[in-house]
Length: 260
Image 1 (tube, rainbow, N blue to C red):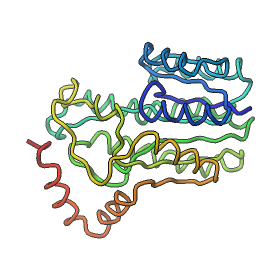
Image 2 (cartoon, rainbow, N blue to C red):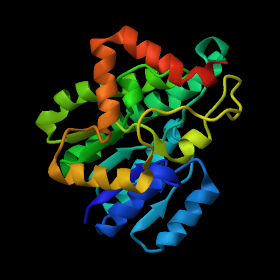
Image 3 (cartoon, helix red, strand yellow):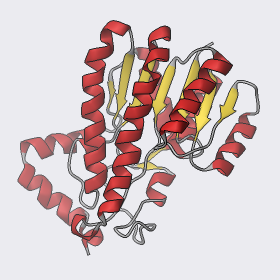
């Protein structure tokens, strides 16, 4: 029976991923900084196949606990899903550098460090890494400088790691969603580090987390290496590369309300 470790699993995409992998009969180790919410999710699934371990995903001690628990309770790790993330909505020049550091720590440094620590288990199972990136890592999105930077770094790191771990039999799926209806946007940070006070601007269709989770499971089963689920955002990323001036004009008009 396959074992799956999912970060950021108490809500949004992480919870929907937990549901679809649970339905496939997998053992689950779920983690989230929201201890109360995580406990409710574990109780909702309510079997010995599901474990929860709450903590701050940027804490290396949590990484060690997660992998020790996975090895001890399930005997293996087949799929590591780096899903936990945060974002911000704030003009760059009005953003405290501490906000940028926090976004980078959660969205880039944490999944990198957890993955490196998990490699021995993944080698044993010839398992798979799934990293949840963003189309914001492929094209600039105004008011999201820290988030764009973190997701771009995530993409580059895992593309290099993909090539270097091929001989170990470890597969990798990089996922590039666009705008999803999840708590990551509801809990977005403002420039002062508090919850953002204005609503978000969007491009393209806002998808449900359940739809996205089903797409990810399907892509993993098919052995795909990259998933771009939203065609509109993919075309926008091409526009950025082909006609960056035009892209900036359109982006500036769409996100004017966020720029003040």
